[in-house]
Figure 1: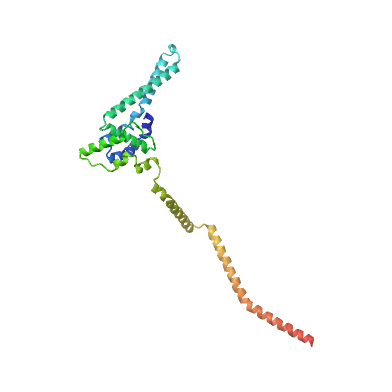
Figure 2 (figure 1 turned 90 degrees about the vertical axis):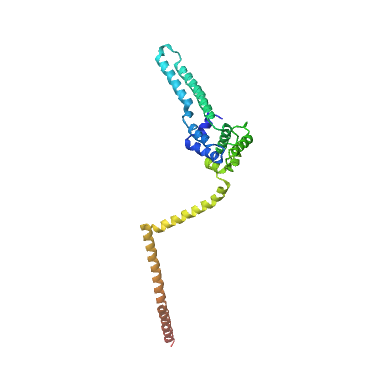
Length: 257
């Protein structure tokens, strides 16, 4: 476990509360240790190595500038001083974490909590392989029972890194039930979008649409009138044809006689 792991896991107080709350609710983490952790881990202690680096580098730069004619290789001196400052900052950082650990009610339980946090972040490998989790969990259960405390059933789940709800909330990986419901949700939202688009289009017509529809109605009405007139003229045309045929027949008879 390194400083970068702490910086990544507890980047803010909100992240610390979200990662540690499942173990608080299960009874693995006491209220005192929870409050102490959410105050300390995301706090200014994270910046100690960088503050020491800046301070040592600045002091070395100031000294080099003050005694510049007498100092050889000033950039090297500043770089070495800054590196030494970073090392001193790490020592200060580790010392503060040791003091934090001494203030915890149950340090072994907190190691299990950190292991749970590591798993919630999506890491498969245990954070403390040497820690006997079963022994620690049995001890915590017996201690809680002796104190007359009722343990939440979730403590067994936390012991096995199985809190899927918290893992989903932190890693963004959906559970199997959510995955099975996704197609139906997507299909429903798609049809809803289509219906909403149609409703908007029906309620919002442009002037071009109105002109086009008016022209279609006029053309349809013209066709109907032409068909009606054609139906009205058909009997007269048929009678005229029959009359012409009779006249032609009489003319032929007259010519023959």
